[in-house]
Amino acid sequence: MEENMDESQSQKGCKECCERCVGSLPWASLIATILLYMGVALFCGCGHEALSGTVTILQNYFEVMRAPGGVLDVFTIIDILKYIIYGLAAGFFVFGVLLLVEGFFTTGAIRDLYGEFKITACGRCLTAFLMVLAYLFFLVWLGVTAFTSLPVFMYYNVWSMCKNISSVEGTNLCLDLRQFGAVTIAEEKKVCIGSEKFLRMCDSNELDLTFHLFVCALAGAGAAVIAMVHFLMALSANWGYLKDASRMQKYEDIKSKEEQELHDIHSTRSKERLNAYT
Image 1 (tube, one colour):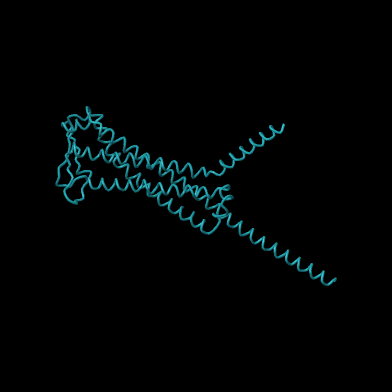
Image 2 (cartoon, rainbow, N blue to C red):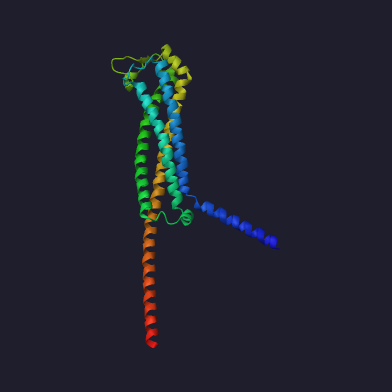
């Protein structure tokens, strides 16, 4: 009988522990962090490989060579974009950790364990600062999404021409890099439909792979935008909680102070009556 009672109490204790652990998780921030990491990883990985594929296409089929010295050309711009991708990957990894930690400190169970840290002025300022950062990064990812849609559109036009080469055969259409700003006006780097270079480019894997990598990078940027919206909603809810909690804490402090004053007054009067009676 005692063993059954001990077993039931142990199961009850495990159940309460599990409920406490599940309740202490900031699910909104956790889901947003996972979505952010997935989007950033997809954008950075696919974007980096798509830029490398673009370099291969420019060198093999358009015969574009890297300019000597420190001249700013399309290859230098691609290298700069790769470094920007490295910075985005590192920066948003740290930013996601900060937002997730902020979410953990806002939950009730963690707050009970570590004290009323978030109800202080420092906690409210930290949440407000993260809200401003999240909004700015939301605008940044909107711009990144719009910028990533440009190579997707350009590669889609080339890819569709390759897929429908029979319908455009005989036309005098050419892919001129001067139209895309990849080379200067003085340079004539173009590939016309029906030429050997165009057919080799369409038959190669570089074009198809690079196009779909840019599509995946665009999807990753869109996922990052959605994640920033999730973070903004979670931070706004946390800010409202902190504001209400701060007001409630002030009310409790004032109430406790008044009760203490009433208790002191009552004790003083009781002592005076006792002394008068004595």
